[in-house]
Amino acid sequence: MCGIVGYTGKALALSPVLEGLRRLEYRGYDSAGIALVVTKGAPLWIEKRAGKLSNLEDSLGDVIPDAHSGIGHTRWATHGGPTDTNAHPHLDNEGKLALIHNGIIENYVELRELLEKRGHIFTSETDTESVVHLLSDARKAHNGDLAAAMREVCAELRGSFTLLAIHADEPGRIVGARRNSPLVVGVGDGENFLASDVSAFIAHTKRALELGQDEVVDITSTSIVVTDLMGNILTPREYEISWDASAAERGGFPHFMLKEIYEQPKSIADTLIGRTQGLNSEITAGINLEGISKVVIIACGTAYHAGLVGKYAIEKWANVPVDVELASEYRYREPAVDSSTLVIPISQSGETMDTLMALRYAKSHGARIFAVCNTNGSTIPRESDAVLYTHAGPEIAVASTKAFATQLIAMYLLGLHLGRVRGAIDEKTSIEIGNELALLPAKVEQILETVEPLRSLTREFKDSTSMLFLGRHVGYPTALEGALKLKELAYMHAEGFAGGELKHGPIALIENGTPVIAIMPPSNSLLYEKMVSNVQEVKARGAVVIAIGDSDLSSAAHNIRIPTSHEYLQPVLAVVPLQVIAYEMAIARGNDVDQPRNLAKSVTVE
Ligand code: M6R
Image 1 (cartoon, rainbow, N blue to C red):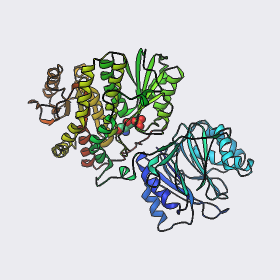
Image 2: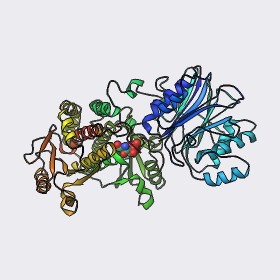
Image 3: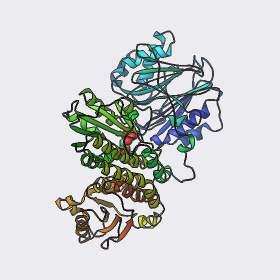
Image 4: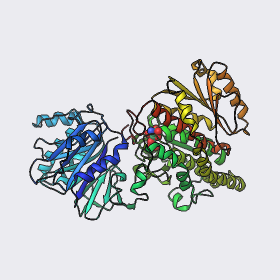
């Protein structure tokens, strides 16, 4: 969703602002704009364009305004289409106050009516424009104090927002605020940054400050002041960003997605370090894991699929009932949850609004919250009692790959840990599984060395209208994930099914030539033969079967081999060819791999 950047400091602001927007492109957007303070007291310099950032850069030409502070925005349209006029920043009627916004202002209609009565002239269809006019009036009422005005305005807004504002009378000052939407501060040397996430300023500083809910931040090149909405001064938590700028670059790969697929062995190894024989007390200190009667996993999309695998592992190893819930559905059905419930929100970004709202519902009913997250300083871990951070590193491609692999690892680690705490797993078994986990990075590496034939195989199915995925046990969520990847990247109809469910309806979809990807359980598993039967059923109706497994299946038209593994850990391996197939299919169909149509990386609205 929208990307937000603010810069104030010694450099000419256009370059760090544009660079920040470029690094936030992955979040997904459909227009972009920048506002800078060039001459104190004169109308602001502003440029905005619908479409890609390159459109904005083309319209800038060689112009480099003499400005040392400014704000930039990439917009993912919600209220009003992706046009030049609706693009941010939005200006007040004097052209001296500029505002950018991520989120949704729910009471914008009533605010607009009020402001129009006061004589403000609106030029866009956005919810954001109400805020800039409101802020303009509030600033005048506060004798030009932009931070005081921001505090007052935030108190009047309903909905979610990250806001950044600049005023022509105060070069070098940027005021921001956040509620249910991300904003971090980058602490530089003679320069400071505000951004949706740290990737926007990672090339300049590794020092970041976390901002809490309903906080206002007021920065210049040499000062950072954070307050609550009452104006009380707060001390934000500072943290060091553990990766560098190169981690957020393509590093010779044609696409971020391919780079991230190849980073999986390292991401898995990093997430496992020091944890296979139990989570250390630093991670679990804030949470009591004794006496839990139920586990509820809440997540969206790919993270939800990791949660489904987690259900198998946690129930098996910790002997506790586990429900996995789509976060967007959870709170609206008012589920029964209390202090004996352990809720596990899973989120790569840590900012997914659906997951955050489900977390808050559970927390308000007394649940204990143990988040799994990839993003330090983000909202979901901040609002949880404990966090198991995955160490996938920055994931830039919209389609999640290495984050999924590490979320699976987190599920296994939590399952083993809960099993030990509850005395449900014996030491020998937990050590054996820990040892199997440690083998996964090398096994994924092995798969990546042999994926080349998938390229031509994928091209064979490039014009198919539909592809089906079958799995059983943990292979079923793996099938769901394979289908989601294909939908996102190939824009092709794709569905995942549990092998045993086929005959209850979905088998009607099979016709001559329908490609079916079968995720075969390990050949020593009890379910192997059952899955062989399911393959026969679809083959008999004309399906072309591509089998993924640790041995060749004679009834399959194509076999993709993966190493043998512990049955529960197999999704970490089986998903790799599925990711590669989706990637290759996107290329074969001429689609945008890293930023598929209509999608955003970080979904910060409900
Ligand atoms: O940041 P999160 O893990 O909370 O995001 C959840 C989903 O939006 C995300 O996994 C989405 O489904 C991916 N695009 C899938 O590739």
